[in-house]
Length: 144
Image (cartoon, rainbow, N blue to C red; front, side, top):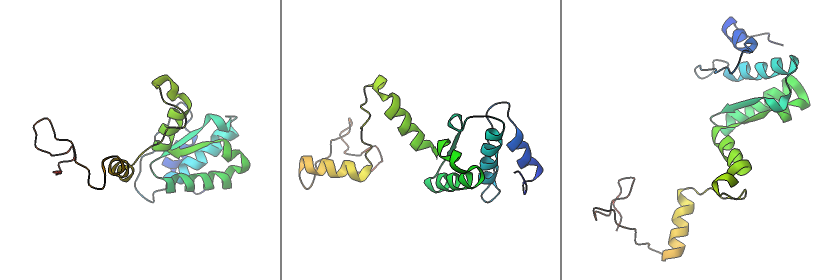
């Protein structure tokens, strides 16, 4: 199962005494290590639903999911493989009621917020003034 991995990669795959953070440069085999580690943990009896692999980009998460599926088959669907942002949203949807959030809350990006403000204030919104009256926003831009 772990063929094609160097010594450091094998050590990461076989380390099972707690969490294992894998840090390495682009193209160094991080995804390969993580997917082999997932397979190793399942081979040792861990339930797939108890495994989480968290990454930074949707592309990396999709690649990791696909490689895990190649190694362990259908069991891969029960492994949590997602981005840090997706994990945060998942946690808020599942447990956000404690913070007063409904599970169907929306996340707005800058364009969404601008559109809502334009709809509320008309075609050319008047942006609120800062406490010092400068009209500068939090990002340093001056608004009319």
